[in-house]
Length: 565
Image 1: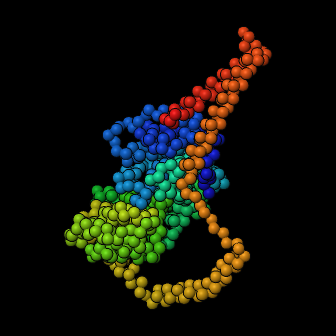
Image 2: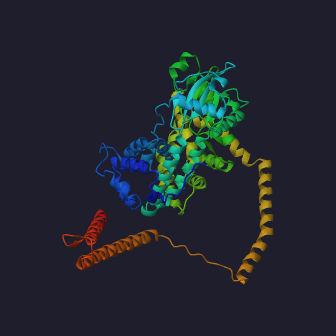
Image 3: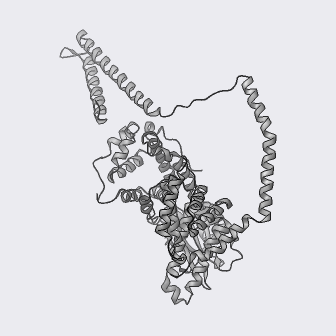
């Protein structure tokens, strides 16, 4: 697992100080000095902040705050780019304008020298590259922050694509995650409007996501699962994984050469029917979401290729989403309510799909739904753009303080991307009509005898367990009360700031007492003319006065920097 430690001690040990200073400098550079000052970070990295220029500001003041965030994230490097990409899928945490900007983040980085990757391949496969590959192109096909892809050929003559994790990337990510965790801790402590979003939990969730991306075995497992889901579908091709040549840092897969689905000119030149491709591509995503509950979360045109015979090939399985049966059914309810323009049903479906801390105002939500319907849905069904409609619904839910599960947002984003590709290939394509059989099938499964019997059995087992367990729980509670072992724990909230202020006051008073003692002691030594003497004045007394003066000036500067005397 990624080593991500609580960094309450980082300010005392100054670990990773250079990287911390670099991160803070970039924040100041793009005009976020006010946020850094609100974090009160100088209490933890006093020395580090003295080396940072706070006079730098954003390069262009005409840029919006969201644009400056994106530019800062790009300059901060791979870990922060990944964080930005993940946050772009979280409308419950990030405003709409920030989501739009963070969605533009690119993961292209300069290629790593092949000799560095060669050592990783040879170490993981326990042999020379030439032992396993007849040839390997040293120029990469693609280069991203986590891995790099090279084209190769096996001794059997099969063309392969070899994805290799960048050397040293894990250590770099661990350093950035530790600093991120420290900043998140300060955000929860000092910025009240960010505390409800639980920044520490976000960083921990981000660490788990990155752990999955670093492990290429998981991507290989995703490819094998997709291949099994579509093994009987001749219209879909999933690249083969070479298990014997794949490890946690190396993924060897079939090389696929096809036409990007967005290249209409090449598709037409190959004599392919665009409507057939649109139908097959749409069915591919609909099957993943509604039938399998396991879907490709990033089906952009660069990851969808067309092979001869109108076969659709998917690439890059590092980001996938999972939706359980209940979520799929609630999502179908949402689509049905949108198509039927039923405001109460739309509210109910949204509440079933989301989470919240404060009970939402359903009357206000219904008014928002009425406005949404009048703005987007009073048009023929074939003219309704389902992806943008669902995105607007998600934004509506966010305005009502409903939290959208990440996989649900990824699913909606996948639908929006799919619809964009479908309309590019066939502007007259009706995605709602194409999705209708899948929606009908999901609804029909709810009332199948097998499903009903299973639910009845599950409820019966739960009731039996409750019947057996409840008397025992009551006896345990009565025993604790009788033995006078019942304890009530009271947790204080919001005392951290007061305790931190108390510590600062105590430290300053202690420092002042030491300075005063040094001054008085030095004066007594000078009066008593304790040797050695310099021009008749005690040298020890002079040293004491100088030390007291230096410490006094240091204390005064610290107070002035806080802006309070």
